[in-house]
Length: 321
Image (cartoon, rainbow, N blue to C red; front, top):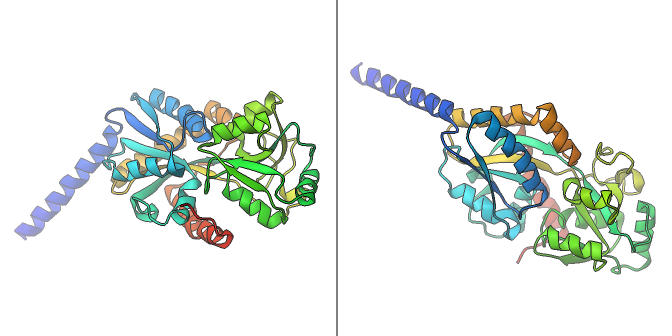
């Protein structure tokens, strides 16, 4: 009886401590790890949301960019971080790509990284250099088929979010393009504008300024429906590649072991902020459609995408050395 009372008391004290811990979050500045260089889509989205969270919660949300190795460096940093909610990671679908692309990672994607909140999703947009004669998907496909391998496309590297969907597009459209990998999408975009490569499939936030300024020509988007950010553009699916659909998600992650009450508080804070009309509008202008959902629903999406994209990557025979 005495031991039972002691155990019950210990459990109660533990629950009280966790509850207090959750209520105190954030107890100090929160680090938002970004796995890519500053100026990219994830960085833009993180800064918009982070600034509003700082105002809402009274603690700085510091964006910390750590590009390199297709995002695995920052993800490894998250996996090693103290699980107290003070270090978080904003990532996109590339998180699940890496699980299949890399033979050995310094973390286990399924066990060491906890999905906390969905931020949204954005279709990509197929853009070409202005010197490319193709103005429609049909013309682009005809150009690629006329001289296989003569049309080049850039990406942020082998296995990156700009590489894999283009490989999938080639497979489904029965075309052959020349892949030119770069160390990040920024240098690739520079060369695309300069005419050293002919096309790229990019997230709308990353390329919107260049479309608006006329430096690049947009041909089609990659989602299941037309993007509100570029409503005049058809989708690839309605333009000759009926099975193609690529709409990468963006989300927030925490280290495994973070207490449930803290995860719930983080989730609630992010969900509240991304649904505020001004924040949703800012994200929408960047081409990102806000998609709040429960922690469980987002975790299911991430869990299901791991084997799904693993199968695609193995089928296409893509490997990272």
